[in-house]
Length: 251
Image (cartoon, rainbow, N blue to C red; front, side):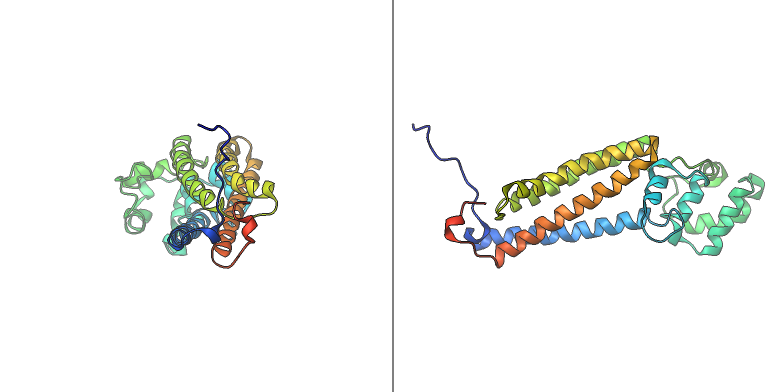
């Protein structure tokens, strides 16, 4: 058996069967839609924590390191839960907390919490605070220290597995694209994986040193740019770009 067989080479999109290009295009479109909804969720869950509507580094610092001026329930009402109840009712809860969150005064906010919050915060989900009764609500009236380590670990493994699969699929498809600069193509493929590691590591480091929130923001941006580049280049070259036949394997 000969040992001088040429190494397998990747075929450019334009030379792939129609069915395979359709499969790749469908996967890219669905993953892109999912990525867009994920970005909306991240924006809605983090933006506004610092009192301003847009997502900022301060929002990320508050999310991971905590607010230095608010309790946990205040930080939630100003951030991810801000749109879950009218401003007047939100102000009543915050006022009760600042009066000391006393049991004898709990009746002034109990009906609001039962009506607006306990649909989800009834104790049935161990991953979100239980707001049934004064004792449970009082626990959230402690100083906000950001996401706890257990929550970070739980979210970390979900992101590590989920994002790795997403970018493995995107990278596998993108391997069929032609870029004159081979190093640039490899960089676009590798950057999301590096960004995932930097992003998740920075969640924990932000709790210790808040300026690491900049790394969280930059890593997320790099992931988004890499995803967009792979999706757009792949779709364009799949259906509109016709390279010279000599470039059939030069991808």
